[in-house]
Image 1: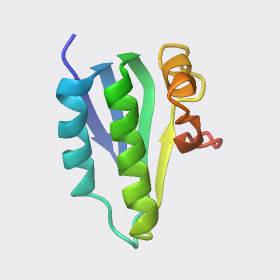
Image 2 (image 1 turned 180 degrees about the horizontal axis):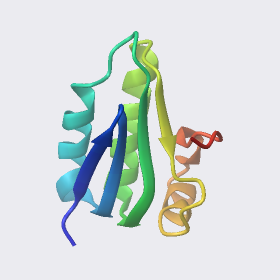
Image 3 (image 1 turned 90 degrees about the vertical axis):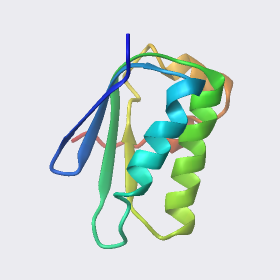
Amino acid sequence: MALQITETRRMFSVHGVLNRGNAAILKRHLSRFLHPDQPLILNLERVLDIDTAAAHTLQELYLHAMRSNRVLSILGMENGNIFPMLKATKTTYILSHDRV
């Protein structure tokens, strides 16, 4: 399944498989919307699968937002398709504990 990104009121939802091939595209796309005065939400609840490279790319995006003093909330704690990979790569800290 191809990756699909939808946006509603600065909440970007990712649908499909997130992997090495498309994670950099997602990162580049979202980087354009990171502004200091506008929070951004990335919803990973509908991601079907994620690989190691994509987990690290999400980590890079998160760290870039933090260093740039931007607000980025990444949702996906409840998604059993991605949580094991994020746990294996020790990147679960990027997930927000808040639900929208």
